[in-house]
Image 1 (cartoon, rainbow, N blue to C red):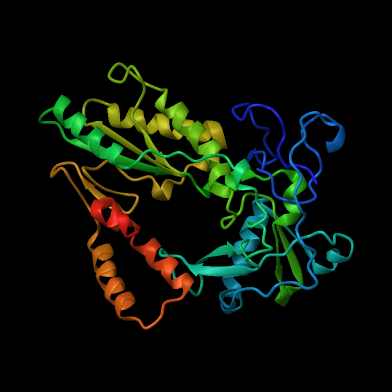
Image 2 (image 1 turned 60 degrees about the horizontal axis):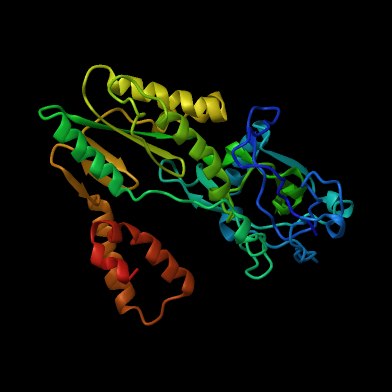
Length: 361
């Protein structure tokens, strides 16, 4: 049992697939991946072998999909077809399991998309955490996942105040950019693809994911290599007013820019960000629908930044939701583990705006 990692520095140039996406070495998943360290030696003869680990269990039967997948079968099919057309997955007859018995099937689910009608639009979730003790996620070695280190969003507030002090009387503008289908720009190692499969019983079809899945515990860390490269290129670009590079804040696939409205700065910074995205991940990396215009009031990571009033606030909708969730949970006679986790996730913005709440969350 060997590693999915190849040797060499993380920052080296990454190979691209036929459609221009980047192949990122997948952190080791405990499984029967072939040795990929370039030595050509079996682990016992390699002076620097990767650690061994138990393989994923063989499945006696396919796990059942979440009820949402059956209830929104059309949405599931449409999403799979879209991914198939973009060469991000392959769809084969389920009988292939007879010759490729090591395929590991994880259930599909559908969650509502806030921007569309639930009956026709939704996000496919690959349940890579199921079953709890024998899943792809539980067999992913966290020690070999790329470490994610993001600066606190208070950095944005500090930059706004710095610009206001340096350019009194000028508006301080904020703009956010977004990478299209962020995780889908990184490919897992080809020897590990068999671990990212799903089953659609209504079509007797197996879907094999060729890109990092939304639902895998290693997707954020794997993508962070690409997102960090975009932030580095953009932050290393400057002009006469920014000799040390443009200010840019990034959180996973969100990139935030702050500058005073002077001359062509706003246009120059936006061009730099778009150029950095396309340089790293290709022409389709820019999500134009989520590239906001420059404004003095901007929603960043779910929080409203107002540069004229110098305030940071939770949106009214978030406040109303929190006011309903807390009493409901407080007066409930019981609370499931999943409901508790969902509650904490829904209240994460509270800890950003109300620091004393951090000890409770």
